Image (cartoon, rainbow, N blue to C red):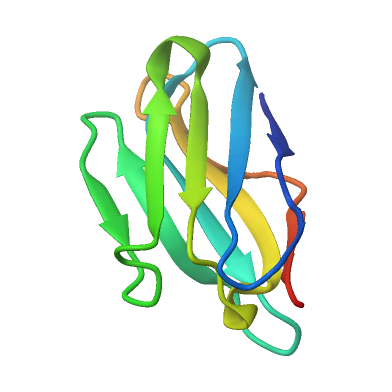
Length: 120
């Protein structure tokens, strides 16, 4: 089993910045991919950014150039630096981790979600 603990959400004015963190803990797993998704009221959950174990990244078009995803493999932690925030970035942000528990047993885990509100 893998536990995910998220932090860093909050209220910020348009143009401001926030940094989200998500730490994975547990035993008997190796991380394949880490990332962030978000869900705004009345909308489907959507990919924000993901980073593979090798460091390759993928971003939603709406956040390219403003958000940066990174990871600390030693700490099993993924970060999302969000700059130039816009009101349309307001959503609950969910950490997502795909792990291999061995013998090809791959599982998908979600964090509890952290609220990001961009408003003046």
